Length: 308
Image (cartoon, rainbow, N blue to C red; front, side):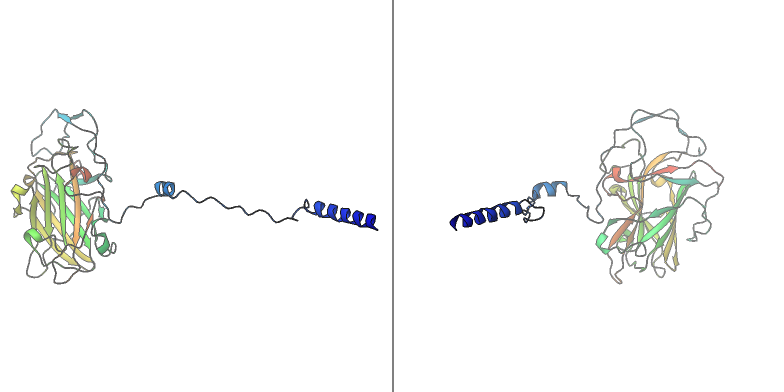
């Protein structure tokens, strides 16, 4: 009887051991993934730039040229012969814009229907991103032209709420336009601070009532003041307003030549607070625009004569 019990016990133990090797008979051992290294995660995680941030591009290589001919102010057909020593004369901030040559000047009256020049956009937020709600809030298209005497601009602004109660030096605290112009792009291509050949001009449409359109020069500081020689006309539209502008080359102290390159940005300021003079946002033709750093501006090219 005792022997039978021992046999039965051994048989039961054998069955139990064989059951442990059967597929799926035993529960799998849980595997715990290691905790990620939070420091490395932070290092390699992408970092989003804040909306409206304007970071200056790397300083371009130094550029200088040797000009082998000096055309007169009336020379609008020949191109300057420039021998580059190093680098380039185009800012790496967006594509260059072209001012078409005009054989006959446009009538400066605020009506842009007679313009058939190249058209460009102003839709890059460079100040007040939190107050800007998009293209219908503030944006623009523009065209440029030139002749031996003047630089011309036609700006069609989209603005859902027109407010301009400021004038003169504070016109930027209302719906208006602004031009940055580097008159010696080749001479100080790598210069990251403003110099006497850099200009900041403002153009106000007025208020379409008691205050007419006007122009103002903020920089160079020793030339600051209203610009009576600059002609500005405006017109109210269903979606905003227009500006038509004539700037004599004498304002910049230069003689224009076909294919010459200049630093350039065109922007529009926006104020949506009725009765309050405040610059809520600024939308520009170049997203990298920083007022005090010309290397963040774009490039303007004077186009060849085309019979326009």
